[in-house]
Image 1: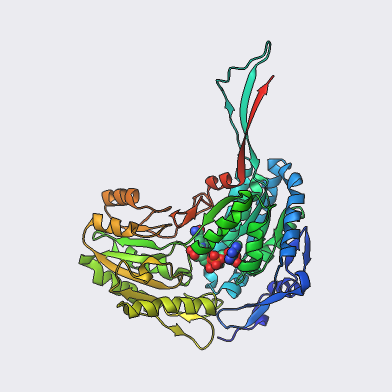
Image 2: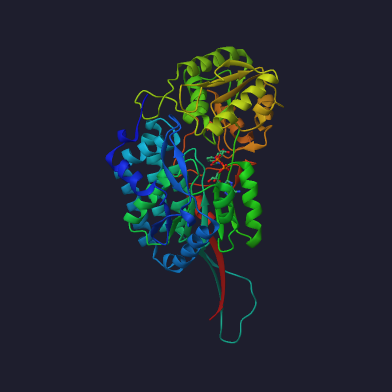
Length: 501
Ligand code: NAD
């Protein structure tokens, strides 16, 4: 397909002219260039063409953004909950009013098929703001009956707790589902009364910049949200280490999560980490295969496998192994790859050339270690970074491709015989983000849901999420939960008050 920027909606063309010319740092309510007017190109991964230039924030820019968030904190923290709720609700409404443009922008930047943004991720982002509008008005402490035996004559001891905003939050997000993952950080932080500096991923900054415009239009005061674009090693690392940042809300790879943890040590920042995964899909012999085969295929090929909760390890009972794996391979072959803005595209490119080469490397090494490529495993297309949906068999539990997160459209399939065996295999991973079990047996479903070590277990479905549901993982998949009312805890401290009155 030939696609040019003039095919974009007029609103998106105007946005690119306004923000993607290297003037996209938002600091204290002002849009500005980075120090020294530094910027870098952002590309359409489906064509390789430059779509705009993104400001490259320096340490001094980050410093100003953090100072702006710190200056805005007392005012925002002092707003009454309903004021914050009204603004969050308005942001949701404006996201919905701009949904077609936002979906188009996300596809242009990230590569995903338009329908993914239009019908799943952008509505999901709006729902985060709606859900946390409610949570802003539901912050509560406790009154406590203590046993402190200190009562001066005529006085009484009273004790209670209150919840207070953590302070200045650094929100650092990845490129795979940029807008909805950003919303998962911003909405609860703002509901709690925190101010923020947002650092989008270098490959996908566009919808974050558009969202920041929308949030200002919704009435968010200047300085409450600041945006610094740039590369992880400079902009991200400076932000993570900044002494005036009180909390880091990070989503990204496990390796970067470790670096963020190190940076947080300096002033004991609060940290939540939503990291990588290698999630198992388990097909039991009694599964409904009409549901399971497309279900496990979608679990890995949705968004070209660039999903933290992707079902990238498939375990199928030996009695139905070949039928299921061949069915998944046929599904993979049937997927139409193309530019995400074409209406019949079912799978887009991976986000960048660097990432395509990384994914290819995993497949090559797996083949060299003895894996069979049942289907896929290649770069395709005259332009862009397309990888054919891939199914690997004859893999062993100790292979790199079974243990490491590929973050691409690559599925490894293995047979099993016994329930205990597959539970042990599913849990034999450094990660523990998600899992799905495909079975018609109630007892299998309950038992396995209890025994699998993962933040989420889906039964006869995969990757279902909602603003009301906490998302996050155990082991190397991270600390804490985004989304759901539990996310409020990430942005609130407890204060204890003891009073003699
Ligand atoms: P990444 O770790 O490379 O980058 C994530 C963000 O961190 C980017 O904004 C990047 O610029 C920034 N960054 C990089 N180095 C940094 C540093 N030293 N200090 C501070 N910030 C730094 O991850 P990615 O490749 O953008 O995203 C893919 C990863 O994200 C996958 O591992 C995926 O599983 C994970 N992810 C997890 C969840 C979840 O909810 N658990 C959701 C989506 C993605």
